[in-house]
Length: 284
Image 1 (tube, rainbow, N blue to C red):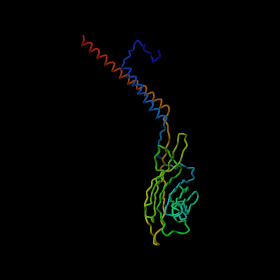
Image 2: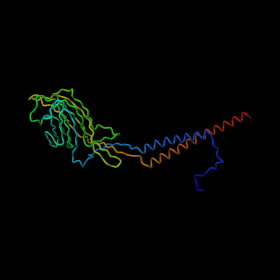
Image 3: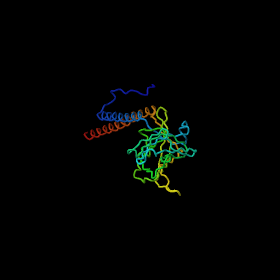
Image 4: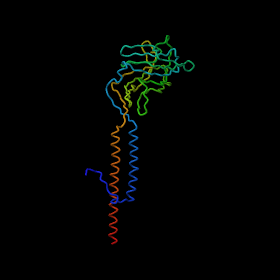
């Protein structure tokens, strides 16, 4: 009495070629939809959101910076890195975790360095300020290979300006000009499926080139990186479709396909039977 899945005896059913064709199409269609849903269930999606906060509170108010820049017409003895910010830091000739590689038989230099900056507006610049003797006409033409902040974040589905200045070429600029790169740094968090978070920073950049003068004459050129931090944090989170949603979708695919196919088959069978009756009526 309580069985809602009552069986119909086989002798009360009638197989048709149309029903067989629709059944095959129905199975192929369900298989296609099932594989599509299965692919979506296995794959992970990345959801992004924006909020106002300092995500990396354990950093001690510091941001790691990685800089790689080549100056093909400036000797390594003259190249130095200076750092200053609004917290009163003023460091000339930063040398920790840095390396200078001679280029062009010693006429040029590639500077590679890793250092930390405070999470306040400031700047760091490549210049000759720390040299024991200033050159007469320092040539600040350069190529920036890399400038990145925080952890190295390379995820296939995340597109961002984590190394926006990578590949910047200023070899054809005025050798005596200073270069200003104004950076807006945006904190970025990536959280994977296990809940592990990685902290990086994207940035936008604007730049200008100029020859500066004061009442004493031309000012020694430099390559300035002036930065400010955005209060907005971008968070990327890896997610996977819940199992219950996957099962619900599969049930909807199977039930919906069978229902629609049954309606189509019933319409075709009814029309076919009606047509046969019309033909029999004409013959009689």
